[in-house]
View (cartoon, helix red, strand yellow):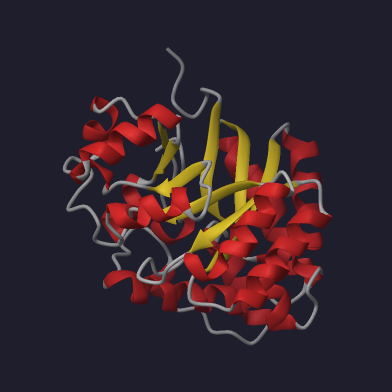
Length: 280
């Protein structure tokens, strides 16, 4: 039996902003005048709820300002994934958020795509991109996300992320248009939110997969529906523990999800912030 890092794997739920090498983050932060605190250096991170995580992730995002920054971190993502035995990766990028912040809507995504293409060529990794949109942000930004997704063949889908207390319904027209355009829809749901967030992701958001979905087991009829539809769950045990959605890896509901006959994938979500790669 080969070691886990040698076995070929798919990685379906990982965010670019949370997959940047620590050394790279410090370098680009310094170059762009952003002080990166030492406590973000993985391994020991536990967050005081989702808001704390979002605030710290926001600091990481502020480090990314130049096209060269986005291109570099995407290229290094490929190298790090290949070292973990990943052969196919779907990288989630908040492209419209970065583009609006920097006043250049297309620049961040185009730079990421260049970095991914170069990294894939150098290490034999196949990559595709998912664009996420914060539930807390405007419908106009969601429309921009959809426009970007339509414009680049490497982008295969879009979806909602962020605080699950905010509903998907205000963006219904965007999800409808994405489905009509042949894009996949992958929403974060059933992580902080309960089964109702999963039901909305399916009914309103046309979800092809569910980001997390770990709180589904409390609703037996929903389990039956998701199993019958073959909707896969992107489960991220280490991330769930760090954000307080599971007490520990042994106590994580992964075994129950598998026991219920659901389609389950294993992912990192935020590998840099935790210092845990896919093989581990």
